[in-house]
Length: 151
Image 1 (tube, rainbow, N blue to C red):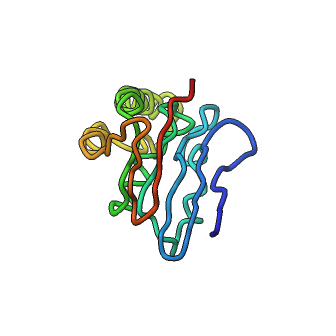
Image 2: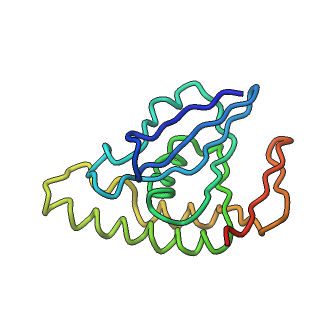
């Protein structure tokens, strides 16, 4: 098994970890750093080059865990996005809000790369979310994943 930390800094933000076992790969979260602007707020996605990606497993709907989900799945459309229904509802709102904020910041901060993703991409992403119930195993390429209530 190989574990790769894609997080840019050892602090809150851009949480993203790649786990590979044989020819299967999974991301644990895919966040954006809340205090950094532009593509520098994203995880080090270049480290995913030539690595398999079967699924993105989202722990919860905070932007530091989901903020780069549209970017990653645009680049790697073969991957499934797996998360609980509650996290999916939060992600829908939070990601649409991010597009609105980035669109406003494009002019204010002179950020021509903004928005990093669009409302249309978020809509398509949300439609494809794989909703995972609590305490039920999810089979991903023979790996058993189970989400539990955090308490």
